[in-house]
Image (tube, rainbow, N blue to C red; front, top):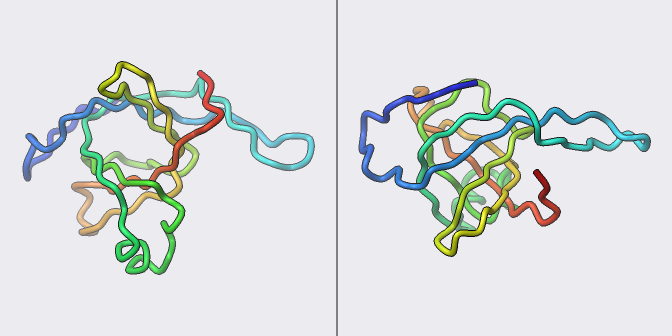
Length: 123
């Protein structure tokens, strides 16, 4: 999946380069999902912000466990079986699991990608 869409509203706010990778995992012996992060990936620019309690409550608590949200240009079929990786200011690569995806204006122009830190992240 390759996506290099331009955001029409304010392209200058999307400054962080992100890699979004699909999981190619399968169900484990106990029936739990075991992600493997060697699926297709795409690069996109996004903007990070912390989620607030009010925002999570407004969404009916759907994203209450999210640590924050990436605002990115719309990508078709982005779902919770993807993860986000990026390099922070200290040069460390960080990995975050997607816990929710929302199209806030329902017009297919921008997505809010709710994430949590992936503590046991591996390539």
